[in-house]
Image 1 (tube, rainbow, N blue to C red):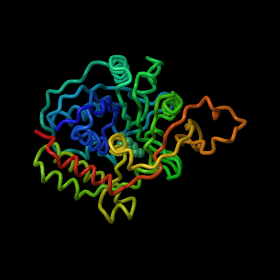
Image 2: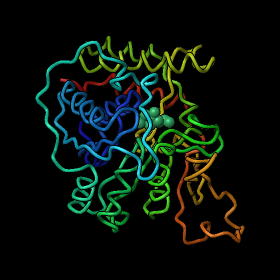
Image 3: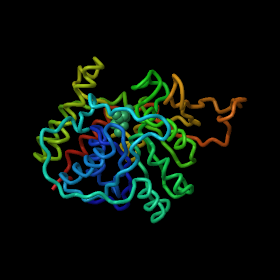
Image 4: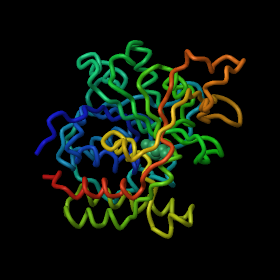
Length: 330
Ligand code: BDR
Ligand code: CA
């Protein structure tokens, strides 16, 4: 039975393997209605991100608008995409792709976000799982955006867990720290799903094999291929991940937070992003709000972010399995 009031979502993404699993989770979940996919550079170029979003939706038989967004960070020079993690094509170097006639929505990602938020004020959740340039540009186009969106849930940053691109920085924030600082200080209802929780949830390749066997469908075969590539990277890096032969759940957890927030333990604090120097990309949280620091940038005028600090990992695995094993593909 369809859920009477599903969460209306715009998915801002740089697909990317974990972005692809998160997308299929969102498309499969009865309580999520994906209104559009806005792409950005990150795991791949923005052109490839848009191609991947169109391809993933089209092979799954889903007709969702896809836009192309920002191609580079705001201030720092662009870096080469991490082909060793996601594959040169972002989907684990697919050996073949089916032909697809799917076309991009001609608007920029930022314009699409603004148009949708203005058309349905207070109704849309923005789930952002890549570098945050599209949100930052959308804020410039429409400064009232924080009041027009229901909430923003982002995968990015880290508070206590070590970073994944430097000892203190997580990749999405690192890739555009200036945009990220704007997002953390914009004043929307904001939830951060960072490495503190995404490094606790390991998804075994065996689960994606089971899902592919269940559906016998090009979409789940494509996902399995991509996850196998991705898991090789993580299993090579972390012995405890190799034991399970799996990968971190990263972007998926932003959607699991949307539908099952009770699986997460939260902390609240004001977050700023270091934009320069050795700590570039660090998400710094003011954890003792009773202290009135003498330096600018930490006052009560800075908005508060709710941050996921702990997660029930096994339950997340089960939510993923139940959702993707259901009948969501034609
Ligand atoms: C984040 O960086 C990207 O590589 C992943 O898709 C995820 O969004 C994890 O740090
Ligand atoms: Ca991503």
